[in-house]
Length: 339
Image 1 (cartoon, rainbow, N blue to C red):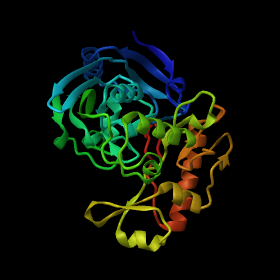
Image 2: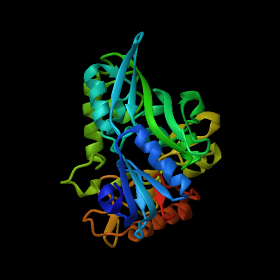
Image 3: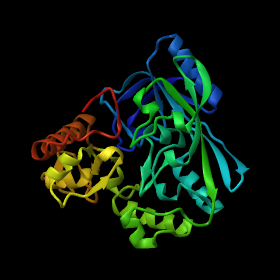
């Protein structure tokens, strides 16, 4: 059924104008059919998952918004591992909770991340030292260019820090399902994120890792909670910049950094933002930087507009560029607007 919908209630920022048309797909076949029919009519489409990584214009979307509401998880044993095929519309954190409860290792550090499973390979979602690229076996997609459904093996997904072949060619692929290959183990793999290692050690039971991650995320306002206005956000608004070793050296020895392949260095966007004069709680009208984490921009009372949010984001980006010569890049997908 197609109708009009205001999109703000479907995003974690509670921002966004109306869609000209709206429909929900409850099966992969229905999802493909809706997209293919819209393509034949040359009607613009927007696939809507959990709305946790989305910034929608105040003008809304002049086309068909398709809510991905597909469900289903199937599991098969593969030696000392399990292959877990997850339909795109499955909520992510309940999947992680099930993996931890079943003794399937590989997703536990990504506990508490909002959104749906189908979005995770697009962004190569990650947290606390884990990324989905480490466990993805394949991604089933509908290719809108060739008009076929096919499985894309992990090695062909183009995974890199917070990106993939699906993000690089955004709009071409519709993710239908993701298959993860997880170790059968009550213990996590080697943990590398210092903040987490300090709490649980270099390896720990899955439930302890999940509990620690959830505590860390709550402390940063990164677990959705109706009682916490800091969670009215899109999570981390900017990615951590990856720069040359020379650029990193110019920032000074105190800059939090991580060595990356090819001699590049990843530096902390949160640190750059704070050092550029934008502390936690910094406000611009009805929107502000989270009071718990400088990487999150929030709409704490639900009274802001997308224009307000983008104005704050531009102020932060320009302040960091002026002070450090580093240009921050937004992490959320922009719909009908740009930073």
